[in-house]
Image (cartoon, rainbow, N blue to C red; front, side, top):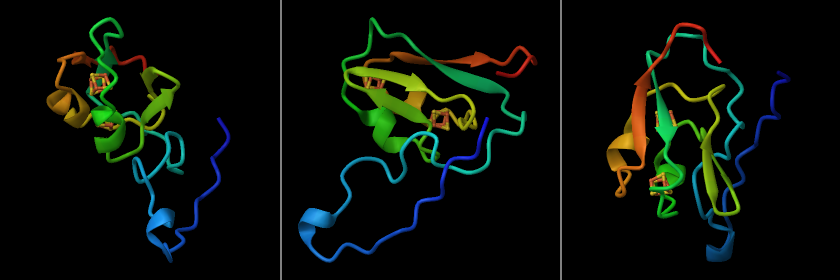
Length: 102
Ligand code: SF4
Ligand code: SF4
């Protein structure tokens, strides 16, 4: 997988330039998961109420939002479980890794 381009932070000059959304888009982090993740979040689309909490809270920008659907980019997810903890609809569960990687 090619490394994504590194984003250069531009300090906002006006309120309209303030970022809206997560601090990084999914896939923007340069380092891919090294294989130490022990569990992974699984999103049950049928339970998802599209509140965006997981997308906003993921510290690694590993939740990808495309239209109304949310998906985890497992190349960058570290398995911290924050998204599952904060999901108000309990649509995210943490599953044990099978050791095979992504
Ligand atoms: S936090 Fe849960 S309900 Fe909200 S968008 Fe993410 S998966 Fe869907
Ligand atoms: S488990 Fe952590 S790193 Fe992975 S998608 Fe959820 S919040 Fe992001």
